[in-house]
Image (cartoon, rainbow, N blue to C red; front, side, top):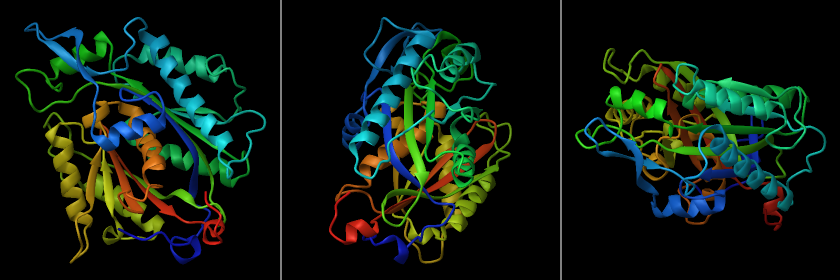
Length: 367
């Protein structure tokens, strides 16, 4: 584990470094980031049999919040509002957070257009961008990114571009997704990709929303920093039509490492989006082997899908929200790690996250 050190001695503050001001989360194991973090650290889940059934009549296990009265766009919208309110509540409580004045700039990360349920998601996106959902004025620079799980790097680049130009002081990254509708469940049942009786190589569908408030880093603040990100395309496909050689994820990792000025040997941990399907777990292991340094150690692996299920486009923001809770702890996994994410259609993403102590902390002022 790397001991926390001051920013000038380690990563340095560059114009590519982002800082997490606050983060909110709503998922199957908690309505807030703090509650969900406790469950994730304990390895708890909320898997349960659902009303969805296989062609053999077996109930499909899902990861969902305890609300069986609300469904569709209204249900997903509710979790999104929970996550945003949790994030903004944290931001106002922390001494280092600046007050949000004027319209809020939101970059919404949503599922790929090819995914089932596009009409439902479009209704939510329209309500959000029209300021009807959050009851908050939104900036004209707010935008929707339909790039799914691996779209995290592109959205971070978009947030950085807005911040470095001085368009706004803070940007909220908001991810939401749900696999809990009949159209989506049937699609993945037909593709034999759900974890059901008779198929052990599948995932458990879930639902989640996560909000992360970002700003440009300064040496004084410290905290959880996003220091590098990269993306690339992979030819391999989960259906086995094209085997994966992990070249896309390897390239994304190298790009993120180069921007963060680290090597694989500097990693204390990696956080994987592997969801129970062997394709993604094998590809991730292959990619890490490709980028490993001679004589290096293997970083500890953390996952989230074994607790919250497959949550698609919400996965990256959810990981950042959890890390914002986890890395501040004395018993945390270490101060330097990487998130990696993969889409079915080939996009791969890697994001380097580091916990550092700011100048104010070295003077004896706690965060």
